[in-house]
Each structure stands twice: as structure tokens, then as C-alpha cells.
Length: 336
View 1 (tube, rainbow, N blue to C red):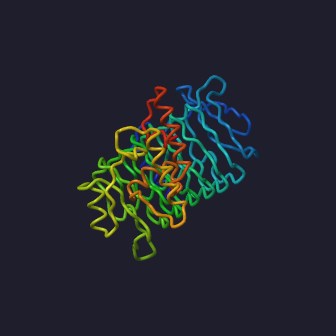
View 2 (view 1 turned 90 degrees about the horizontal axis):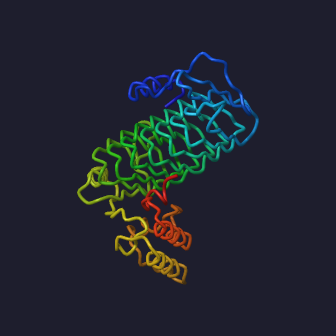
View 3 (view 1 turned 60 degrees about the horizontal axis):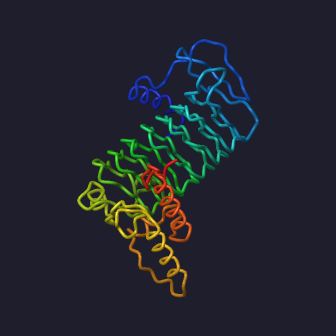
């Protein structure tokens, strides 16, 4: 997928999501801290360009009384100086190629308000280390995270129904690709060339997985299996069908993250079980009691290890839930 196809992606995005691309009014631009804003007819501010030299960019919630709602097309395109970007809890859309070729961008947040991330938005953001998407995100597009080569784990939220063609193309270091219950479709080549992929976790809500969607590399003219990929899912699901038909190992998974003893709670008992497993593995000989399913449930920080850090996070969730917190374990551990 190349940059000269981006205009096609923009047209497709506009056709699929009517009204998503607001038209800015012909008014005088506002410039603050190197960021140029334009105000549309609904009094919503759009970030249209960054020309500053700062490595850290903090976008405010309001500019001259107008709420910031959009990061427009190419707003930060090829800005090599930016390293960290903070978006306000008002941004609804990140536009086409907005952070494309920002090769030194390491960190950006995804606010709860965000609904759509357009095509190529983070294409070739080589240094982006973590992507924690928000619960409430409704749409990503083709090549949204293409060649984000430093990201090792990615979770798709409940509210995202479709994972589109080439959305994660070339995320070479991706080890864990998790989909939360609610997603319905994974399109062809969605996570192609994720060569280090080990855990592909697909819930029963997914009822369509197109060819070569996950678990494959491509080198013209052939597709090849990713060497260590395994698909975790429910028996009898579309995930098992896809795994079986494509000769990808399938592991039955119960999706009870953090609940090691399967009692319907994530609490100190589960943390103790993780610590006991960690101690056992750390001892001479490194014996293991956990199954592969247990490992995925226990590894809540997605570092491919079961250790005291996971136990600590389990205890943090237990404290949070005991105090009235309403997030599910999946939301707490894996989403922004």
C-alpha cells in the first residue's frame, strides 16, 4: 500500500462514514504554539497543521472558545521532530495520514471521545512503542497502523466492528494481537506480515475472517505462515474454522482474563496463583503448571511472561473493582 493510493482511501472512508469529514469554514486560522487551527461552521476547531519545533505537543480541549474535535488530513505529516503528542478528551477523528511518516513519534494517547481513525493515520510511525486504543472507537481504516514496526501488542476494542484490509500491515514486532468481544469481521490481509506474531486472540463475536487475515507473511508471489502464530478462541467458532483450514495451531480459550481459578472474580487468589507459578518457573528446572490458556489469562501486561508484575496488576484491578470501579478486566488491562 503506497501513499499514492491515499486519495482512494479518503474517498472510501468518506463513503463509508458519511459526515465524518467536516468541512472547515473559510475563516482566519488560529495559531497557538506552532499548531494551526481552523474553525468550522459548527464552531468546532480542527488541527490543520503543525509547524512548531517542539518534540512534545499538547493539543488543548478548546481554542478561543471552540472545542477541538478533529485532527485533519496530514496535520502532522512527516514531522520528524515530534516524539510525544497528547490529544484532548474532545477529539472525535484523526484524519487521513495525520501522523504518517512521523518516524520519531513514540507516544500518543487515544482519548475516550475518539470515534474514527482514518486510513494511513499512523503509517510508518516507526518509533511508536505502545498503542492503547480507547473503548468507544468505532472505526479504523485501511493501513491505519501500517509499518508501526515497534509495537509489540495491540488490542481491538469491543466497539470496533470491522478490522479492515491492511490495517496492521507490516507490524513486524507485533507478538500479541487481541480482539475483544464485539468485533464481527476481520478483512483480508488485515494483519499481514506481522512476522513475530505469537498470540492471535479471537472472540466468538467474530463471525467472518477473510483469507490471509491473520497469521501470514507475504513475499511475492506467495503467502507463508508466521512461524510461531497460534490462534486462541472458542471451540466451534469462526476462529477455530479459520485456524483449522489454514493449518494454524488452535488453542481453546475461555476469555476470563485475570481469573486464573475460574471462579468469576479477579482477586487476590488469582494474584497468589500467578506468584506461585512465577516462583515455580524461577526455581532451578523451571517447571510449569499453567496451561497456554492460563498463560494468556495471567499475562495481563502482555510482555509474554507470567511474573510478579502481572500479580501486581491483578491486585490493582481487585482494589479498583472493590472500590466500585466498573471497567471490565479487558478494559482495565488492555485499553486506554
